[in-house]
Length: 564
Image 1 (tube, helix red, strand yellow):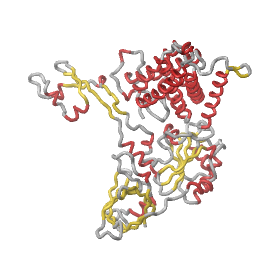
Image 2: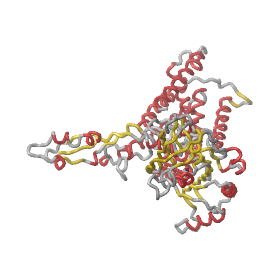
Image 3: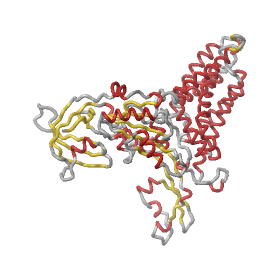
Image 4: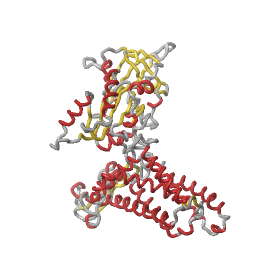
């Protein structure tokens, strides 16, 4: 969904509300002269705020992380606010939804439209300032106009506003102009506050308290509880992140690589002899190098390269399509071992590791020990270890942590945003099956290993078995491509050629397939392969033909279960 389709859908909802709560209800004399435009904007703004708040309420931590970016990256002078990013995000979400509900119901009147206007002005300031950083070189203040550069998308401090959480990401320019439009709507509503349509009259009271005020307080309480259920007590109810259940990490990484951002880059060239300037797009320069320059050479000049000089400070960049900027791309070669294990595997994720924190780590130890006995590989990704003795290093604390909880499995230090994106819990547990996310748990909801094993550790059942003759092995980056001949059925008279892929790091399969002493890389050329159909391994992107640890047969994706 794009911002344009979202606005269209919200407009349809606002139109329906206008013709029901508005026009159809206008038989009341008080509203007979209220313009339809006012009703429409009232309901449009209310519906949009409710939706925007709801997609953030299902993942309040994600909103808090985004606010922390604004406080530290965009506005370093507000860095002191970073520890309060979470309560600030919670307050913002609650206010956004309650104001949206009150706008639709017509409650609150002046204070409601006033808060709505203040929110829009605040958001417009943030997104506008963020957008303008595209004109600023590094370490140049926004009011130092003489040093502004040509617009560069890469100079923008915060690439996504977080307006709709992880549900939808907007370009900075889309965000800015969206907020300008909404600010004008908020000004209009504030100016026409006294004409807003309300559903519950002000004389409706319960024990002397206006029903309107009770409803506002009730909505605020319900939204607050809902937010806490989605980060403090459990994981987000609805997951929009790239590591959600059902995602094959290798396939998602390939899909992201196949959807790069598209940029329009315009260079400015200056003729050193005539002082004339010329704009040219990067694509034209690549496809037709210096052709246009040669046409503009002065008399007697033959070397276009020495005559024309690029003006780097005037280079313009415009992002045409955002493409994929998912954190899934950071699951690179250094982390492939995390999701390349064959069969089931456990991944623990923690933002911070503190040997003194007894909290959930005893449970982590119990589950890990039991899973290791069943042969499951286990990894852990973390961002940092608390420096308890303040000596500037964390090596001793890390060893203390490992010894305290008997952790023998690999620990991988990773980027802060990556570990926060994988799971909204520190620590949190992810169960993988051949690189596909099967289930994840908040540390307050960790079951026993016996319960996990009983309910979720269910391997796919063998559906096909093929006799293979390996004919070629072609490693490419992080994958191994094999070519083999086989008879898919006993009725076939001739063997068919098939191709299958094994991810680098899948030692269970690769140890059976590879040998440095063989020309094809195979210990032996003939194998028996067990397969099970897995629809999750078919990419929705036709450009991606990868089937991680599997192959395509007759349009169906099959997971390799065993090779012998």
